[in-house]
Length: 432
Image (cartoon, rainbow, N blue to C red; front, top):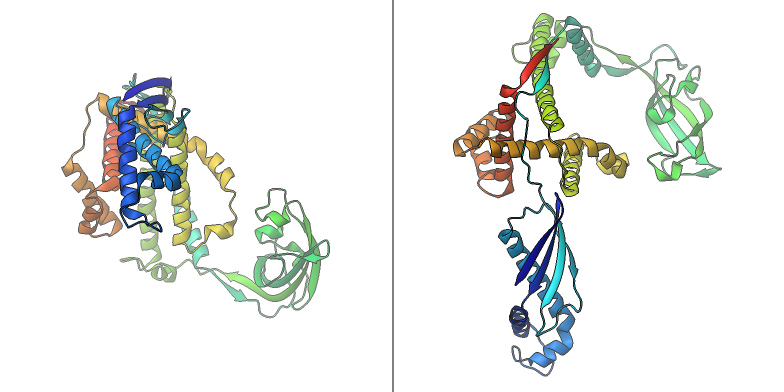
C-alpha cells in the first residue's frame, strides 16, 4: 500500500492512498464468502450460492461494503504511520474507475488535524488581578432579590379598575387580516399593566379598564419574530380583563430569614452574614476565573495559530447542549422557546474559538514543561467532586473507569496544572 500525506494548512492534511490489487481481491473474497453464508436464494441451498450468482445480484452492495472497509482500514493505517491527529471525519474522494478486481484502488482524503504548536514567550506574562470586593450595597441588593423571589401575587381588594403597576389576568383573541392564527387565543394569561410591549408581557392599555370589560389593540411583530407566521405582521387583539392582582413582598425581618430554611440562619442579621459570606466566596471565584482568562488571553496574544473549524463547531455543540440541559432541569422544553439556533451558534463562535485556542495552547505548554497528571491526581479530583456534588465517590469512580469521560477529566486536570504554572510565572498587577 502506498501512502502520501500533503500539508494543505497547519490544520488540514491531504492523504492519498493506493491499495494493492491483492488486498482488494482478498477483501472481495471475504465479502462474498460472508454473503454466501448468509443469503438465501431460490433454487440454491443455503451456503451454496455460486459466486457468479452473488456478483450478478449483489455486486453494487458488496463493492460499496468493500470500499468502506478498505478506506476505513487504510486511512487508520495512514493516521498511525504518519502520526496524524484527526479532529473530524475525513472527506473521501474515490479515484476513477473505483473498485476493479486486478487493479489498484485509489482515493484521497482531506482531514482536519490538531495543529502542532511550539509555544513561545509564555513566561512572565503581565496581567491585572482584580481584588474581590463585597459592599453593603451588594448585600442589600441580594436581600432585595430574595424578597422579590418570596413575593406572591394576591387579589386586589376594594377596587375594580386596573391601574399602572397591577398584574392583570386576561383572556385574548387575536386575528391577522381578520383571520385567527395559532396562539392568538388564550385564557388566564397574566400580564403587567405597565409601559412596554405585549410580547414581553406588558399591557399599559389596560389602565382604567374595569373587570369584565374589554379593550382592543394592534400589536406589530418584528421581522425576526421567533414564531415564523407572525414575522413582520400586525395582529389585532381583543383583550378581556378577568382578574386584578398585586405583588405582595414580605417584610425584611427575622421571618424572611427563617423562611429561607438555611441551617443556623434564624435572624435577619444571620441572613445578612450568610449572604456576605456567600458573596465573598462568589466574588473570589469570579476574580480567580477572570485572572485565569486574562492569563490565557495574554499567552494567546503572543502565540498566533490556526484552529480546526471542526473543533470550534464541536465546542459550540457542547455549549448548546449545556444550555439545553439547564433548560430541561428547570422544566423548560427548549423546542417551545423557538430559538434561532443558527444565530445562537454564530453568537457563540467567538467564545468557542477562544476556548479551543486556549485549550490547545495550554496542552502545548504542558508538553513543553513536561507537566503530567497521574492516578493520584485523578482520585483526588474525584473525591473533591464527590463532596461538592453530593454524589457517592464509588459512583464517580465507576463512571471514570474507562472511555472518553476519564480522558476528558485527565486532560482538564492537565490544563488546570498548566494554567496554574502560567499564573505562578506571570507578573500580576492588582486592580481594586
